[in-house]
Each structure stands twice: as structure tokens, then as C-alpha cells.
Image 1 (cartoon, rainbow, N blue to C red):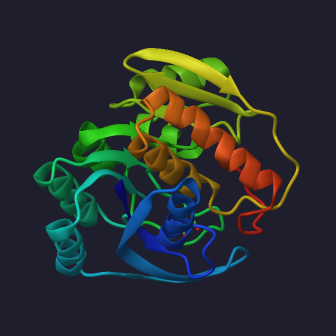
Image 2: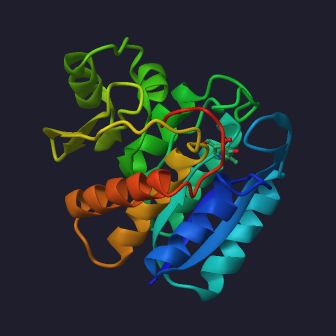
Length: 244
Ligand code: PXL
């Protein structure tokens, strides 16, 4: 049971590859981490981003997969359309089952993407994904629809290219899930907290960890929602005021 995160590094470790590795470890799978970009940030302030050259992202992926047998992978911060293209090429090459967290805007307002990357996500990555996990803002960018109600979220969920969960931290805790064309809703109580930095990252890595432990997609999503919810309650994340 070896899984992989392909994402950016947040040195304060509430989000990004470091956070993913902690989640993999906690759920009991062995995690590997491919770094697409290094950031300088803490939960309160985003300083800067240094993207890793494409050929070196590729070399990291090849070096791990040369030795390790990985079935499930999550992608997080990919930064540019070029990196999105590269990562989708590697997913195809190694026949990986990918959960895509379509990271676009940092909750702290930082530079997580070079430009509008929704187009590249839709064109290259989502057609190869087994699931994508946008929050409301990301789902709006992927679909070009406004989402301000449950009905809007259902419509957007049906419009996204692959199976998806639109997380409901900005929609009264209403998570909209579409698996094999079937839409379902899981409503969670919102918790009053300032510990939400990285919750999106941890949700997608938890889904991958549960999938790798032989849970089906629906069960993996439910378990991952519980895992993140408990983490928020226990204050496991960074301390930025935000919602997944
Ligand atoms: O949660 C989005 C995200 C993803 N990846 C990295 C981040 C953040 C948010 O800060 O830093 C590396």
C-alpha cells in the first residue's frame, strides 16, 4: 500500500506535501511525495513560490515509480498549465488512479498558480482523474457557473468532467458528491474555528489513503470527510481563518 502526493511544499506543514504525508501515515499507508513547487508561507501569510523545473518533477516521479508500485496518487498544487500537462502524461504512462485537488487560489491569497489553470485542468487532468475535490470557488472556475445554493452545486457537480466532491465549507456544510453519474449530498455541521489551513489537501490525501486500503470510492469519501472533520475539531491543522 504505497501512495503518492504530487503537490507543493508548505514549510509550515498544514497544507501541501508535508501535510499529505502526515495524513498517509496517520491512516496507515506509506506515502511518497513529489514536489512541484516550494513555497515560503505560514498559515497567516504567504510570502513566495519557487516552482520546480519540469524535468526535475518528472525525474522525481520516475525515480520513485522505478522502485515502488503505486496505484493511487493525489495531485495538489501544480502551479502552471505546463506542469498540469506533464503530470497528466505521467498519470497515463504509469496507469495511476488519480484524485485531483484542483488547487487554484490559496486561502491566504498566495500565489499557488501562475495563471488561470482551470482550462488546463479540464483539458488534460480531469479526463484522467477518478475523482476531483474542488471547493466552491474552484468548482465555479472549472464550470464557469455561480454556486450559491444546493441546486447550483448539484448542477456544477453534473457539469464537471469526472466524478467529484464539491466541498461545502462555503455552502453551509453541504458537500455535493457525484459518483458514476449519481449525485448525493452529505451535510456536515460547520465548526467555529480558525484551524482550517490545509483541510482541502488533507481531504484528498485521506481519500487516496482509504482507497488504497481497499475501500470503494463512496466509503473512502465518507471516511475522509470524517477524518478531516475530527482533525478540525482537534485543531490539527494550521491556524488560518478559512473554510474548505
Ligand atoms: O490548500 C491549498 C494549498 C495547496 N498546496 C500548498 C499550499 C496550499 C495552501 O496554502 O500551500 C502547497
